[in-house]
Length: 464
Image (cartoon, rainbow, N blue to C red; front, side):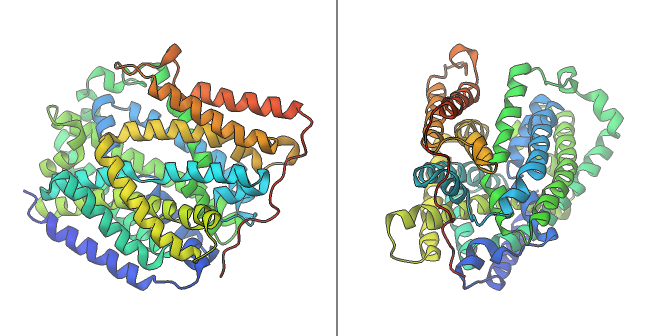
């Protein structure tokens, strides 16, 4: 049934290698930030494709909980992205920073930057996405999961190493087209099989048509706080720092929100169609099984490539981000020997190995999103957001570092104390007490007569 999928994937892999070869770069600024010359189309293509790697998780959630998928994984992130566009994007691009730790160093000093670099690295390890990549290879190619995860990660490292961020941007452009094309093929075919949108809606279980999918208020509302991760999302900042101008960064995020809304429409209704047409299917396999059911072999091959492209665009973006964090923010603190590019190449290997180990150990995409998002978002949100404003609004330097450590510790403590039934102490999601701890330290710091906020006057330079 998937006879044409290996051929389609081989052609896709060859296209990625050709793009990687053509995007080879020499200078460190080009390797790490594409020379800070991203135009609006390139910015939109790389941001849209990077921010949507959890496609199998979206299919599973839509299949199990219905239209609530849009209110959990869609609307909260649109709102957060709009806030980033209107409040932070132009401010971030107007700085000399090349990374989130650079921004923290300028506002609060070196210790805040070091803690921030560790948090960014934790968020950037693409365990969830290499796991999904392995799952897709297992589903379509029949490979054992462990072998598929290792092979997919190794291939990703190989082509990203050629040109760094320039390779990421160029391949994201291809993946942007393929991810939309795949779902523009499968959804009309599925609707034709069901009998149209009206018939699809009528055939859904009642809970799938409710706003919360039967999950309850707190289970939905918590994602509106987790979505605030967007305000500290390192891939957003990386692309913002690489934009040609502050206006390109701001407009690029706004245009991206429109594309995410369209893609969420396609993916949510594809998941609902799978629920109606394949009610007994494994929810994780909702999209692959839907493609097999409603598409002829050639179109199903295209849909499979679209799924791979959706996941790989995010996996390689985070993989390079983790590597750049090692090369630009962590390694220079440990050793002045070697260029940032050389350290970044080592970072690719370190990040890839960590992603493989975590993916095979945790085996749950949504759990990785939830737990890592709760820890890093609560730790970085207030210190990083306030760093873009006047000194009177920021944390005191020592309190910024303390707030990041305290929030991360509180979130981790709540996660570790989670019961077998998934409940947390006091019935609170970890992000709520963690953000409270961060806010309390901001208030305490504002009452202390410490020296005014401020750190290193310049971000760590990148040699051109």
